[in-house]
Amino acid sequence: MTGRRRITFVFLTAALIALAFLNLFAGSVKLAPADALQALFSRGDSAVAEGIIRNIRLPRLLAAALLGGALSVAGFLLQIYFNNPIAGPFVLGISSGAKLLVALSMILCLSRGIALHASGMIAAAFCGAMLSMGVVLLASRVLRGRGMLIVCGVMIGYICSAVTEIAVTFADDANIVNLHSWSQGSFSGIGWQEIGTAADVICAALAGTVLLAKPMDAYRLGEAYAQSMGVRIQHFRAGLIVLSSILAACVTAFAGPVSFVGIAVPQLMKALLKSTKPALMLPACFLGGGVFCLFCDLLARLLFAPTELSISTVTAVFGAPVVIWTLVKRRRE
Amino acid sequence: MLHTENLAVGYGERAVLREVSLHVRPGEILCLIGPNGAGKSTLLKTLMRELPSLSGSVRLAGRMLQEIPQREFAKSCAAVFTGIPRTELMTCGELVAMGRYPYTGRLGILSDEDRRIVRESMERTETEELAGRDFACISDGQRQRVLLCRAICQEPKLLLMDEPTGFLDLRNKLKFMQLLRKLAAEKKIAVVMSLHELDLVRSFADSVVCVHDGRADLSDSPEELLSGESIRRLFGIEEELYRLWKRGAAPEAQAEGENPSLSSGTPRDKIQSAV
Image (cartoon, rainbow over all chains, first blue to last red; front, side, top):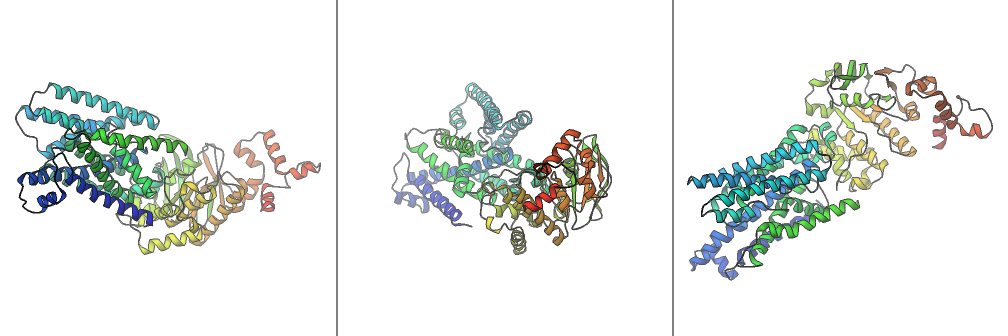
């Protein structure tokens, strides 16, 4: 491992830890770092501080790190599949498809007075993600050119979002307020139970991704070479689709659609590592996604505290310029 | 090493070539020549198992081609495709090491043995100093050597190449073919390649197969084939164009005011004098 790569990983790990602590200390309720740490590690004097740290800030920062990492890995897989540097779960409409099905199943369950379990939400999100993905895949057979595919994905995203908004507007329930903030994208309101379920699913999907790292490496030379080296192309491509959908679905089920993380983080990691080797890119994307989302969530909470911004607002501000930069750089080459 | 009997190749139902019978021994180079679109690439793709054969049989080291499991096939047959793969931020060292794909485990981690083979192959192909360079940022001649090196790392018994010298300059063409000749002989690799440069075919091929009009025929006497009228027929070159070409091949003769003759100043002599 060259110096550059080592520095990248050290930097990412340090940033992740630093941001985690910042997220723990900062917030609309002022807590001194010492009090916050006391509330975290021991039975503190203040039940309020304990509640804020243990039940609000800690799960929220874990969710941001975990889901952010999963989202950028999903983006990286999609970029490999479509051989397109600006492919990602959000622009291809996959997040929105997942959002639609989660919203529909939540409204259905709420109207019958059943609470939807976390795993049920992931399952609904996965179905939605696969539906959107199916449409995108069909379109990719017909459409020529990378740009057209993205436009198609964005349109699917708009349709799904519109239907979701309609459903949310007409569903009458007190929980709709919650649903509304979720459908804009937010890491708030994710409890320990959800994090547990999400962690299980994401870990399983990441394990599958690690097993795909070898064919991904060969696939960098193109399909023909990969096949001649023994990659089973059909299996490999199906694997990419399923794993990226699971990861994106899991994120959407709990945090709603989060924009640009899936595109921007892999591009930034590529630029940091100066390499596209999957064995390096996968861990870097996971760490980088966590760092990016912790940073954005911190801003979302603090900038206009006590009012919160939706997470997508902040990720778009930092993510969209990266996409433009990627496109300009490509053009110059 | 490679034997085909009555092989028919093509896309879907339509056969592009029929009754193809190729025989290549270890260490031999077989060149496919013929006009564009005659079916050279189709034949190569079939041998690479990219396309299924329509009928007939292909045997690789005595086994039917379609019965060899994929991983094992990748261990016995390597390919260099036409054109240069577009890569992003990939070093030549990484690219060459990919040749070990069929030999590494699930996670693709190179063993010491794998590393030794990669190093040795890079020495053989004079690409060691390129190991840390980005594949997208080196010259075409270097890239083609790196691609050959990757194929050698796969330790194939059969090496298939589709127009590997197409975009190289004369020196790099000769260098590439010389390297290939040496590696094929040393490592006992059977090579099947398509080539457009007839001079190279004459200098480096052990056998020549003419691909034209739905057939692939082994040429009995490559020397005769490549210097004479049969080339004109193979490529369907018009009388006038052919004379033009032959005149171009012997400009000195013309400069001295002599009649352009077919016997003097063949391209091969010119190449040798140029080198």
